[in-house]
Length: 172
Image 1 (cartoon, rainbow, N blue to C red):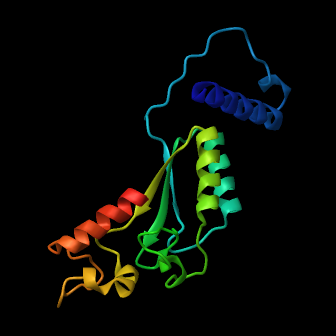
Image 2: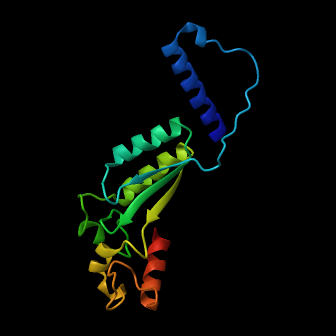
Image 3: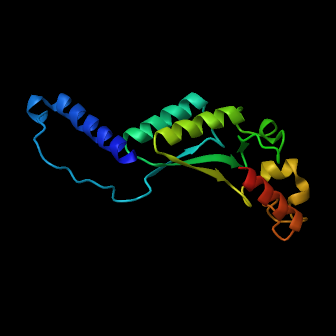
């Protein structure tokens, strides 16, 4: 299914180029086309943690990715400047600290996942931990290292921090 979608995308791009350049470029001769991507993972990154985008913008982004045969979406959702995920593990965190307002509901995330699947795009949620966690640790100070030079990092020497991170990442 992905190969057929990629082939149609390539044909649309060739045809569009032919329309721009003139009729002599619009001929399709009989033959066989053998094509394969150079890299198995062809990805694009979107930083929604620092700069929130609406679900519609994210969907447009996915559609543009599919048109250019990109198959992996790195979605940066959590950072020291923003938490865009409503999770049970971190209930309310998405509403407390962000550089720009906004977060995704579970329903919206499901919509994005569904569209990505239809477009043959894998989503890799990017969650910056144990570092880049200053905002999170203001909400959960018990997981920071006491007296640390960088209070924006989870204390991995604290078993409770590890348990919390495992639960949170499992939920993601």
